[in-house]
Amino acid sequence: MKIILHSDDINLLSYWEKNIDKQYEIEYDLEFLNSCKDSIIILNYSSLETNVKSIIEESVKNNNKILVLHRVPDIHTAKTVMKYGAKGYGNALMKNHFLASAIKTIEEDMIWLYPALTSMLINDISETNKDTDSILEKVTSREKGVALLLKDGYTYKEIGLKLNITPRTVKAHAQSIYAKLHVKNRLALASLLR
Image (cartoon, rainbow, N blue to C red; front, side, top):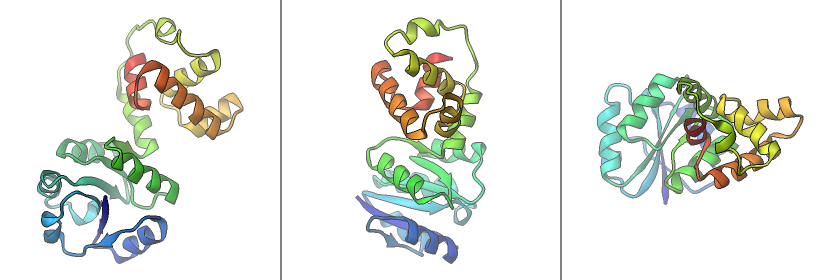
């Protein structure tokens, strides 16, 4: 899938160029994006603010997958662009491993959110009196501890510090939990457990 970058900020485009490890094209003309098909389009939110809805919706009609990046990401904007059809939303200046993760996730036709925003969304899910013990009976005791912290919106790094394990080990436990409970991500796990 072709990757197309668009921003009216030359410094931001330069930053993305240094941090994307795949082939890409830069498109300066926002109108040209309407003719793009079957691509991942990475957009700077600030260059869209006047007509975000129409740009995203038109691009999605052409079978494009949209990743909106914002210098000051917030939960309200995340919800808005996702409602319009974006497949991802995050910090425009995020580190290259987050950018690579976002592109890979979107290529696989899944949703990607900057981890801090995922934690905020998890905290927005109201608590119920679910029997988490019966839901988590398929996982190991260590995975149960990780699952309960994920449910509460902790990041992999925070969980690692709490449990004295590496974030990579937390991620491995999380992947195992998702597979055993038939969920795709932290948000789905939180919905299942809350």
